[in-house]
Length: 289
Length: 292
Image 1 (cartoon, rainbow over the protein chains, first blue to last red):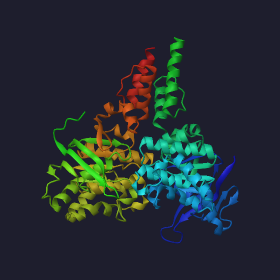
Image 2 (cartoon, helix red, strand yellow):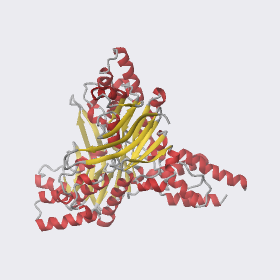
Image 3 (cartoon, rainbow over the protein chains, first blue to last red):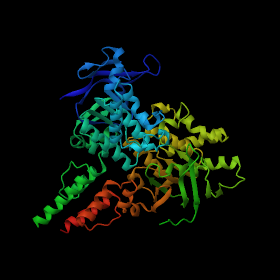
Image 4 (cartoon, each protein chain N blue to C red):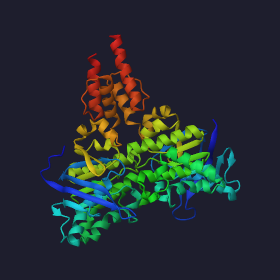
């Protein structure tokens, strides 16, 4: 397996040396594959957000190493700033972090700090805005005039415009309506296809990750309990339940049909797949007479 | 279709509200909204981002004042000129609100103190507060966590404590403004079970604002908002049968409903269009399958 970035025996403790000391991660080893979208899933408190911040050097491991292309990002702590250009992090509810006078300047802020030419910055801003679903006629508006969903896209575009080798997004679709979820996650998927970069999406939504992720990594109390394609991961129903997650509604429904005596195959996790599978089972019976 | 309401807890007529942009130009968010809510019912409000759901919640809880129209909450006309501060406090006690972020709503360092915060501010006697806190903890099934620190709780547990804090003020109605949006699937299920039991067992009127279609299935009535107006208003079955209409306003239907709809529409399956629950869909498909 070709890991772009990995944690090697990482332990992370918050508030070391105070009465509030808490171990968030205990000797964790995991890796994210190059050039795919990995969905990082787990219940609240499973360590997802801590991992996100370790990956781009916002947190420093108490023990262990974070390896980017095989090299320890903390080998020279003074150069950690450079890692943050290579590993972009979009926090939860990033719409609260906009600050520029115009949408265009807000998206340009990150690339503007990378020593790029003005032409290059402009091109990146337009490109990122396209993937994030921001139309150029919003460029001159104040970000504060936009709706919550639009602000979220501007914030995501700002990190996309830095074209990081690795993009980590913490719940990018949380709180959005279904159409908004599709647009943002679809935009991230299209961006990944074009840039061929490594993307990690933290999400609670099995339904979304079934569609948009190539691989899923399931965390339980700071450890990887399952890693594989959505198909492989969703086949472990009981285990998912135990770690506070569940399979998509449609996956469960197909299993219920099976139990009711309709010979549909399992491993279905979208409505379109379910539709084809039900039709296939009915067709087979019609043909078989 | 407007629902038949005989004993309303909320009555709004031609309600309008606008925010003003930087140049003072009004941006209408709620447009001539007319609706009422039956006391003791469980109503879900759906709508895309920016459709006016949260603004409506803030109007009902008197955080915002309507520009025009009439609004009566709990039998009190909230647009009356002589509405006193006491009236407003009293109304806010009776119409509680639970918000989205579980980390922004708890104020104390111990769970039971957090729940006591509301009643203490209402000047309730200590004995009575004790009784109410214990009862509220039972209502949300969190008694064993009474002496924990909120920081040790999961998101779903924190939301249940926020709910208990409202229950301790003995509300008639609770408005949940996307209170499940930030929770993991287990936390979401815990909070939905709590909401449902408050409504069914305690008769508290529930207005639940959400983006999760599967949650709306559990309500008595679903109101779909679009551009500050009511777009659909009916039982969950009737609302979710209108798949294309919902999609046209940026919403979806639960996955099982979507599958049934697609089978009926694209493959000509003869199944009823208002199927919401998995068990009903399994039954209908099984019958069809066996009739081949």
